[in-house]
Structure formats: C-alpha cells, structure tokens
Amino acid sequence: MPYALDHRLVIGVASSAVFDLSESDAVFKRQGEQQYRRFQEEHLDTPLPKGIAFSFIRRLLSLNDLSDDPQNDPLVEVVLLSRNDPDTGLRVMRSIEHYGLGITRAIFMQGRSPYEFIPALNIALFLSANQQDVEAAIKANFPAGQVLDSTLVDDEQDNSLRIAFDFDGVLAGDESEQVMQREGLGRFHDHEVKNVMRPHNPGPLKEFLVRMGRIQTAEEQRKQLDPTYENRFRVSIVTARNAPSHERALNTLKSWGVMANDAFFLGGIEKGKVLGVLRPHIFFDDQPAHLRSASTVVPSVHIPFGVINHGPLDEIVQQPE
Image 1 (spheres, rainbow, N blue to C red):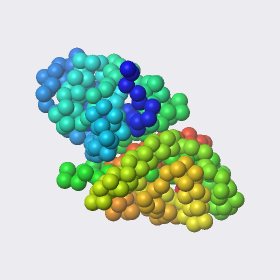
Image 2: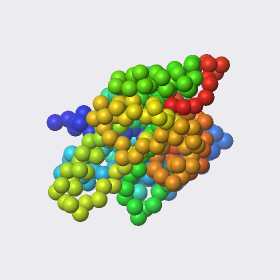
Image 3: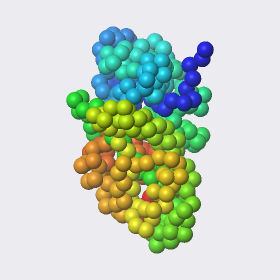
C-alpha cells in the first residue's frame, strides 16, 4: 500500500538549508565539478556542519513523538530536495544519519532544481539557500523561502520549537500591502477597518501554518492524557501592523482555524529588537528591510512574494505589512 502524505505536515529542504555547504561550494566554484566530486568522496564520512535551518528541522521532527505510531504514522515528514546527483548527495545523506535527523526520503536531480515536485509530495514549505530556486517556486505559486545567512539559534538541551511569522505577504496575501504602497498608511488602516470581518486571501505559508495547527491540537490532546506534559511548540506573529489594523489579522487566523500563541503588532518598531528577546528557531518575512535586522539575531527566511519584492520600485513607499 502506498505511503500517504496527504494528512501529514511535509517539509521539503535543500541541503543548503540544513547544512553549511560553504566549503563544498568554494571547491566547486574554484576547481569545477570533477574536483567537487572528488572532494565530496574524500570527505564522505566527514559530517557537514550544521546550517541555518538545522535546529528548526531537528526540533520539528522531534514533535513526531506526539503521534501514537511515530515510525509508521508520523505527524511530520521532511524530504530532501537536492540539485546534487545521487553520488555527490551521498555525503548529505550520511550527514543526516550522523546527526540522527529523521529524514529518509530524498530526490536528487543533477544540476536541476527539484521544486517542481512540491505538489506531488504535498509539501507545505520548501526551504533552500538558492535564491533562484526559491523565486522560481514562488512564481509557480508554491510555498517556498530562502534561508538567509543569519544567526543560528540552538540549545541542544531544549526540545521546544518556536516559529515566528510576519503576516502580510507571508501568511496572508499582499492585497492590503498594495493599498499601503499605493495610498499610504492612513488609507491602509481605513481599508483594514472597512474589511475587518473579511478574511485575507491566503499567502504563501498559509497552508504551512494550518498544518502546524494540527501539531498544536496533538499537544493539547497529549496534555489531556498527561497533565504533567508541557507544550513545546509555540507560534508567534511579528508584524509591522498596529491598531486599528490588528483586528483583521486576528480574525483571519481565526477563520483559518489556527491560533497564534503570541502576537506583536509593532507599528514600525524594529523587529530585530523584539526577535532578539523572543529567539524563535526560525522567522519568516517578505521584506528584506526587516530581515536585515532580524538575521543578526535569529535564523531568518525570506519569502520573495508580492508587491514588496516584485512591484515597481517607484511605487514603493515604506513599511508596514
């Protein structure tokens, strides 16, 4: 009987998201493909260093212990999507085994981006450090983010998972952002108040958030069975919105059947300062300006979606989301 992915949270990761490939990439760029192959073969049993999304993936997979049958019916599945061929990708698979990551499924496509397989594998999020691959995936309406060179937050003694999201252009579409960029902050607030009860259109990571909600439900069920259980998973919204535009965002989340544990409506306050205290294991935002400060304190992912990333520059005003 085929292994079903339909009811699981499936994440697709490039090796560049999970591991630090800087040394390998330098060999490829300096000496070409043949020397790169030789380098990987010679270092086959040398584990690759941890990359920016390593902690996020490890902690996410650890939540599979909430399943009644983690081996055969996990809540979370992570699939490696690689531009390597199977031979050069062998070092990646051995590194995965070395660190005890529960990743057993992989696609290797020599020199080609595997993002086209996102729908076939029911993937709710594809992470890669390759900007072109991520932008192509977003253009094809697939959920994808570029892992940036940023600060790695990890405490091996702690098994919690903290995820932070921007709202517009990440969880929600950029309809309201377009109003902001065209007409300014006042019109933006007017638009949100007028449409307060109308849910936003979904953004690239809406489905990812909804499927994460199933893990929240599983934790609550575990707590009912075991009152001593302490929740390990936490979702935060960190947005440049502020009152009176906060209410529509919260109503939208409620209409999707999901709940954030924390919400920060910052109204232009630098996100990096808040994130430095919150210390999520991963943060998603569509605005490069916000990610510049965020990436200095937490693992950060750029979602290259919407008017902020693709609109005419002369129409861009400023903030928020």
